[in-house]
Image (cartoon, rainbow, N blue to C red; front, top):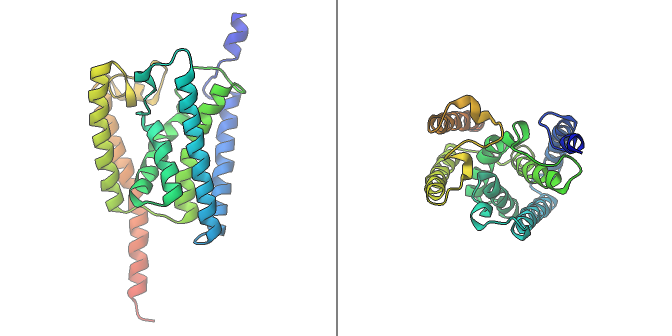
Length: 243
C-alpha cells in the first residue's frame, strides 16, 4: 500500500513533469503563431479576452476549491503568493491590455512563475489527480499569457515598465513580510524556505537568500528589458533617416 502511494506522488522530472514541459513548449509556440497571425485585428482582441476569461475562471475555481476543503484556513488561502496574484493580473491584462498589468505580467510571469515549471513546489498526487491538473494549469496559463502578449500580440516592455514592476513588487514584498511575521504564514517564501526542495536552497540561509533573490531578479528583469529598448531605438533611428 505504501509503495503504491509513493508511486502515485508527483516527482520532479519524472514522466508527468516532462510531459508538462512538452505541453508548455507546444502551447507557447501555438500561441505565438496565433497572436502573430491575428495581430492588431478584432479576432486578436477576442482571443485575448477569451484567454483572460479562461485564466480568471481557473484561478477563481482553484481558490473556491481551496476555501471549500475541510482543511481550509483563511490565513493560508489568501491569494498573496505572487503566483496567485500573477494569475489575476494576467487575466486583467488579457481583458484590457492595460500597461501596468502588462508590465507585471511580463516580469512576474517570465521569471518568477517559471520557477514552478522547472523547480515545482508540489508535494501531492501525480497525474491525473485534480490537484496535479490544477497546479499545472495555474502555472502554465500565466506563463503562456506573457509569451502570447509579448511575442504574439506584440506588446514590449520599456524601462518605465521595469520601474513600475520593481516598485509594485517591492511594495508587495514589504507587505508580505509584515503579514507573514504577524500571522506565521510564509507568502512568497520571504520568511523561510519552502519545506520541499527549491532553487532557493542554493542561495544560502534566511535572510541572505532573500537579498540574493532580489539582486538576481533586478538583474534578470533588466536583462529582459534591454533587448526590447535597443530594438525600439534602432527602429527610431531607421525612421529618422531620409528616404
